[in-house]
Image 1 (cartoon, rainbow, N blue to C red):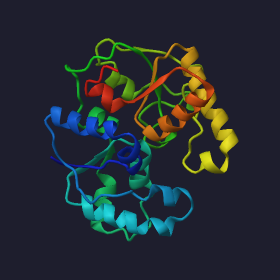
Image 2: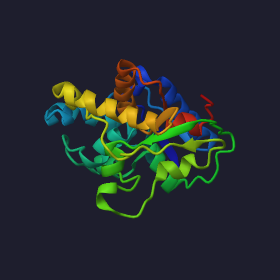
Image 3: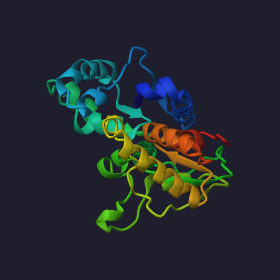
Length: 247
């Protein structure tokens, strides 16, 4: 199986360690991974802002870069959701359909495809609060939604439970949106900031030293809220923990 690795533009710019950890982790698990060097944005920001036609060039370039791979893996639920469910600014050719049907967020790829049972190199002796983004929770369905009253399941929690030394804090409202929402955090700044601050305080009051997530976009928003509110909590992408980061 040949994997094409996509690193979202905001990870490349602001959280390169999450991208590096994703590559290293896949290679530790024996995967054949390539990183197309001329990749850019997947087009999600334009589509989310209602400018769907403006996403066409980015989507076409994405397909050109990744159509040759068996699967495409990315450390981002929101980008995965865009490619899989909203990648329609371009003609739906066989190549486009192949890309859409074979794009995976990192957690679901590890859990559902590779079915990883052990991370022997990983140890994280800290108490963490897990943040599931709305994209991973409600679009990709990597965890149960409390509003549906369905039986509990959590693919990221399943993976993190295989890490030595880790423990978990449970916030009072674990499924609540953090308020990022892409351009929502710009157009509804006050509401977004209040939601983000409430989120980090909920985790902190539950005893979390870190907030861990599969989406750095949400963590970027929460980190800014935490710093402004003086909440002493740290942030880390799940790939970094699974790859062996200790702090």
